[in-house]
Image 1 (cartoon, one colour):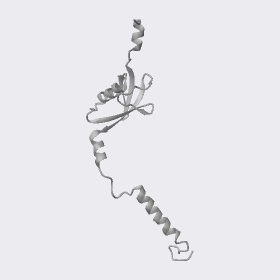
Image 2 (cartoon, one colour):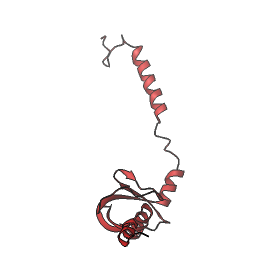
Image 3 (cartoon, helix red, strand yellow):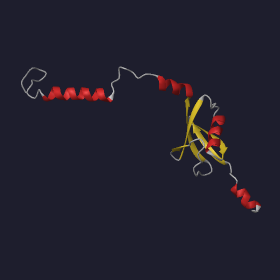
Image 4 (tube, one colour):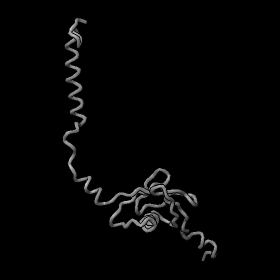
Length: 130
């Protein structure tokens, strides 16, 4: 059997992390990505059934069930929250028909180019020859 000191070092230690959300910093203690996400929901008073959180550590988004990246004690994590109902509403809404897409913009630019290419000897806006 291992000595008591080696069994203690193998245990996961809860790390102190700082969550930044809306300009405020909140301290949480966690040992995995799942516990960071759960702690963020609790500490920020954002129920998990109403809010979807994106937590970024070292430029990467924490994924549920994934291992926690190597972070220093007191590392800062950025938190972004979206209301689940707002996200669903945005995904189901139709686009604005008055805004042209890329294909329509390309077509309009081609028409303008064709109109100006054919009129090299046309007059100026003051009806004088150029």
